[in-house]
Length: 101
Image (cartoon, rainbow, N blue to C red; front, side):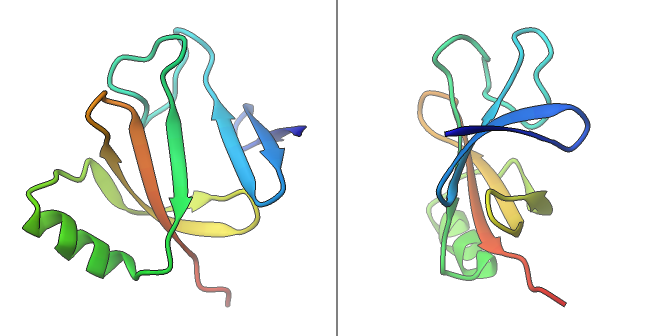
């Protein structure tokens, strides 16, 4: 793993095609876990299904989406992301690689 500084002073651990964004307790950035605490997580998964189809599927299952689609910084490339919560309130980001152009 290597430490990475990105955005406006944010920190992450970067390894291969993956990245874990780190939050400072009491200084979390949005969006974040519902109740940030040691051990809570913000996870991002790059999916091949277009986000519009993911959104339709989540709506059919009545899974609320908190934010998105929005542009984001990925581990390897820019992303287009949506955010939702797992049953424990952790933040889950589902992303497509952003079109390069």
